[in-house]
Length: 316
Image (cartoon, rainbow, N blue to C red):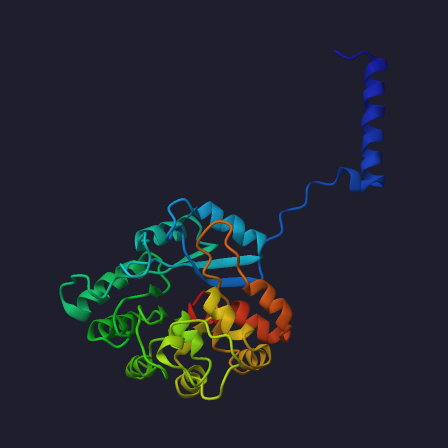
């Protein structure tokens, strides 16, 4: 029990503390809420191991990296074809990550076209629809050691069109194989006009330039962009083709010729999506510095950084 003197003293001490809080609020303010990442939607990340078993990217590791780089949401892409990676990354893993963090991670689904599936296209539709019902927002990364318009590949495109989800693909001289001018890709894009194709990889991004030979299609050309690039032609003629500006190939396509690259991004502002291909702890990602250097108009940045992905993936 407090005596009268102790009680009066405690009241005075409390009043003094309250007065201090009112006159010096900075000293007593609660910790500010953590800043919420809002700048980007990244349409290309992976979790798990890629080629190095000692560099495994966990879900927590991906989320921490996203917070550090102001990435609001990220697409998690499976890799299910033997040519796509050393360590396969399954759809179930991407779905589980999306279910655990629905406000941050966007799962895609994938199945190798050569995998045994009963019922042809209808069988594929049944499988893909089941994944969509569990939260998948797209198909990919479609990175398969076949010609881009091989009949088995075309079955996948038909199924994705029927289900109504976009497909993110990889092109080079080993996976999703094509020729200079991307005529195999054009065959698929024109055959399935209601399917949104999202392009990625050396073969896709090298095709920002004309004048390519087959070797250059699978590489990272460093010379100035030449007229007649297949990407501009395809985007001009087909409303269902988009670009994922991730990885070294995406960065190189713009950085190799910054003047052309900046004009291209402004010209195709409704077709380009921000991506990184972040897949291992500590990985360097050049896209952040690239966009700082480009100084694009704010409305163009908004579309590339978030708006186009929000629309194509039906996130709102």
